[in-house]
Length: 212
Image 1: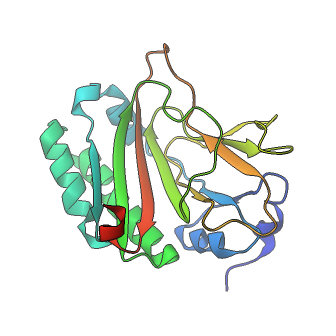
Image 2: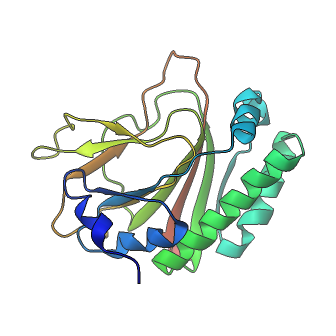
């Protein structure tokens, strides 16, 4: 049985830090608004992905069965001419693994998968997504930022940044934590900095036809 000890550590920020993929299932705990799977990317992988021209980073927006994530990301890499090699395979393997884990945790028969290359201020306002839950992993660049609103949806006074390469799972308005910690998040403001981010986002989908 997974220890419940870490859940109490989330009370101040609404976000739990876990160290193993099996602990992502703790997002189901009523009081957890989000969690971060803290892991360190391999230096060789990070050097590789940070050194790629933005045009060589894979892009994708598709609704798919979780098992199809590997082939979709492979095709996205082919389309972007992402250089072949062990680092590219690690990226493909990781997205496929996260899709499988997240679908299992949320019991999702389908996922909306986005691989976005971000160079500006996308979603820079603090907000809560209109989803049951979302998994975000920033493979390159600054990670998602989050904090707890003091009152009535005001911007957090203390802002935390998810480490690069660490998956961040956050509950949305369709599955609020109880009690609601007031957790908000945003994409980091990077306009004018020259930074390029590569971000994966996964949303659970019950019926693709309703999404159309």
